[in-house]
Length: 140
Image (cartoon, rainbow, N blue to C red):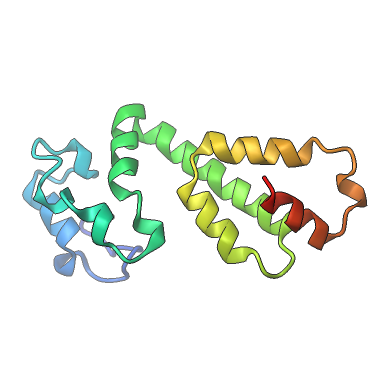
């Protein structure tokens, strides 16, 4: 979120955003885990009732950011973006975009690295068609 600015996540002014308003009420903290009241009642059932798959790990992601620090967490997220780019550029047969996006979002970074390691270390990779590469990746 961007305090006192436009939130790029929802595209609305912060005054209508419950998260930004809560942040301002708690001395302008940037991340919920920095609050003395975290985890509060807002997080009791957050992972159980959100309908978006990409929101499934909100609580565990906040805990991870708290544990390893925001810089390390953001670096990990940037690595996930790179992995997604690799998957889409080299293994998407035109039907795997959603699958790759969800997988990168939900899997842990070490799991993604392991999958890429299995695939990219194959000696026959250059001889495979895009469809064969996509199927190979699904088997990992």
